[in-house]
Length: 372
Image (cartoon, rainbow, N blue to C red; front, side, top):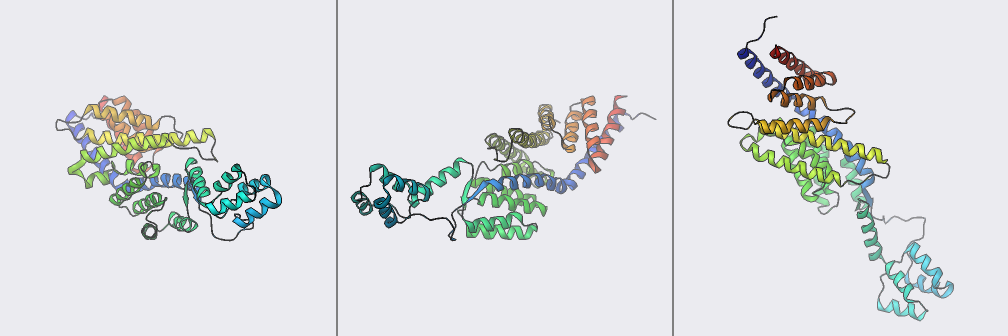
């Protein structure tokens, strides 16, 4: 087989690299769907333990809060000790005021009992429930909000999901779960292939909750993609800086995640490691994009940073993404690290399919010829 000349090799390599980039843009929608399926799965996991419903007004079979007449009557008949147990168990349906306290004192209520009854009032119980909910990492929503949120969360038709979210936002503008509703709307726009709206809705989401992991992961991934960069070529450096900021915020939010009640320590650690791998991959893409912005050619420092991030992205994962290995190969090839590039492209070829596998094999062939 005849050897390629240096000039022909460079021209052919540039042609293949351009074809790869065009193919990656064409495949961006499919890749984003795979990514967002992962994020959607995370959201569904979180939502199963994230939302605590506010008490419903529907009748129940258990005894409700005690009235002031019930409290005074039981105090007289059963004594302070029995009443305090019932008050702590059932709560009371009234707020303590001077008149009720006067009646209780007359019925021989102690200071301790007065304090217990005060703490069992509607406002104090609501505040205690809210504090407990926040401490557990959950948010409180009404039964009506819960039903409407579940509807938009599980809607498979993107247009219907968008309409449901907009209706939810208009009806519940102060809802504690509006940030998550916008995240699901972003997912719906991703299904439609509208990456600009994905970023817009993701940013609306994190404006409401700056540590919303789902939305931060969406933004960190979507902004450096070929689709979005193509829309903002004039401000590419500014856009990449924004993506890097979201990567940082996502890293902090992931570090602060709480373990779900159904998770073991090992499962929780594995889940966080998976999220961090995604973040390293996103940061690798940021550095790879930046490396090509230099006026004097490729920025080798940015390429080195990209390689480091991609290696972290595939480390210790059972099923690494083949596109991450492909981009790792690109980072190594552009630095002149031929053997490392061949190794990365080989891994992409082994675990990848379709265009990624095809172009990885072409890169391997080119690099092996270049070594000769």
